[in-house]
Each structure stands twice: as C-alpha cells, then as structure tokens.
Length: 199
Image 1 (spheres, rainbow, N blue to C red):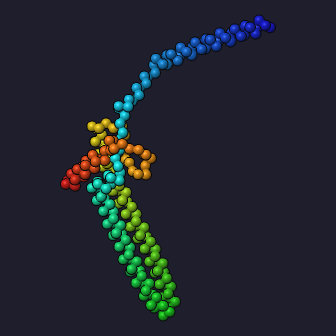
Image 2 (cartoon, rainbow, N blue to C red):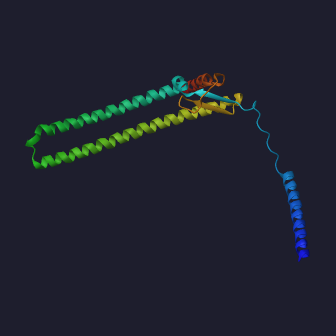
Image 3 (cartoon, rainbow, N blue to C red):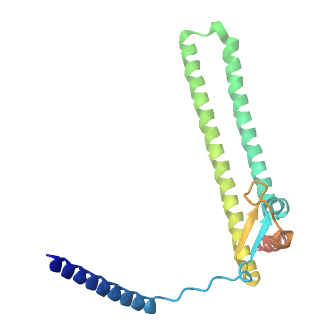
C-alpha cells in the first residue's frame, strides 16, 4: 500500500514538472512572437494647450454676429406673438362689450372661436420657438465646426496632444497662461471668417 501511494506521488510530481516545463516553453514562444510594446510617450512629446471659451466668444466675429442674428430673430418672434395676442385681445374685448346682449348661439360661437384662438396661438408660438431653436443649433454647429477645422490646421505646426476649451465652470483648477492659445485662435478664426464673407 505504501509503495502504491509513493508511486502515485512520484508520478504526480513528474506530471507536474512536465506540465510546468511545457507551459514555460509555450510562454517563451508566445513572447517571441508577441508584438513589441510601444515606448511610452516622453513628457517632451506630450503637450497640452487651452483656449478661454468666454474670451473666444467675446472676440470671435462669427460668434458675435450669430448672437446678434439670434437676438434679432428672438425679438421678431416676440413681436409677432405680441401682435397676434393684441388681435386676439381685440376680439375678446368686442365679446365683452356685447356681454349679455349676445344670444346663446353667439356665445357658443364665441367660446369655440376663443378656444380656436388659444390653440392657434400656442401652435404658432411652438412653431416659432422650434424655428428659433433650430437656427440657434445650426449656428452653434457651424461655429463649432469652424473652430475644430481651424484647430486641426493650427495644430499641424504646434503639435499639441490636446487643446482644451476652458470656461470658469470646467473641472480645470489651475492653468498656466504660457499654454493659452486663445489669441492665436481668435486672430486665425477672425481672419478665416473675414475671408469667407468676401467670397
């Protein structure tokens, strides 16, 4: 009995050693054929810049014109709604003046017309607001694309790894003005926008 257990123990040790040897050979083979790891980027190659979003918005001509356009469109929308509301109020005033002199049929007709006026006003307001929202988003998208396109061109020479937009509500708590590219960005974007307007 002791011999059997000894023989089994010896066989188990031999199998374990063989398995270890085979696995270590396979690992060595895999390491030979594995792609070489890329060298980590040195600190000299990793450069970050930022631009001040508030300052860009204050000095970028296309952004300022977009704001003016949106403000004018918003004023136009409000004037249109006020005009429609005044027209509705005039009708309501006529109904009030008639007051008790209205027949039941006229009263019911006035109520239907009033409900229709409210519905038309709400629908018209919603259409105007959607149009304003769409125009605003289109302008924002265009401006964002122009900034991104300019930064791609600008960064061909500068070779920054990242260029962040900084605003006071961002997560960045410290910024070194040496890496502030806002002035470059404003100058380049305004020049590109002026050239685009001439076309």
